[in-house]
Length: 288
Image (tube, rainbow, N blue to C red):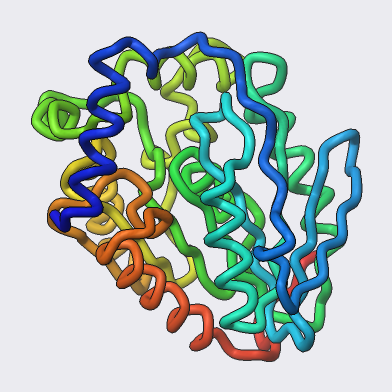
């Protein structure tokens, strides 16, 4: 773990010990990109069923990335997301569609899937589409890929929240993780499911089918609660014949590619190269 990552780890550990990081806190206001974020980019926004969808557009976009932010389904998009999204957009000439889906407890996974169906219907047929998400957004992205987003060229999941069973194997990683709590997440998943069941595969997509998924990139560190499930997902994808790139970061915290540390900078470059490798023209199935 680099000194920068260690400082971030200690910061979140201190917050937990002081009782400042716990379930039930009101959501903070959603972040917006700064003028610095948007250098050489255009930002458009629209409302779909009352939810904001932002388009981050470089001068000559070559692909579209649908991005689903993390936040445990209870917190809105954060500054770190915009730093990451805008830098990737600028350096890869990728258009980003950033979907600010409704949050729990007022909304649930079914509302999010309905919104994303409408987002899908508005995607251009002329460019390849990459589906990307971090944490809760990574789990939601995998759910979409398992449903009817079979036109996606690549799936990029950053520390995805995949299941809420959190078996005995996860206890070591929960002790290391200063950020995530198994009990809190299981409660959130139960509410987010809309039917009182965190086992529902739309909420716990590790329980869904991996057949026919696009090439998939996984990013996970061994200082996060989700580590065992991401490793299991990698194995299930390989068993289903899916091409998998697993980026495992020793000493990496949750969503480390979004953390401005040596580990995060390295992972950012990996994601950048994966986006640049996506063909600039659609050759497969297109969105309806």
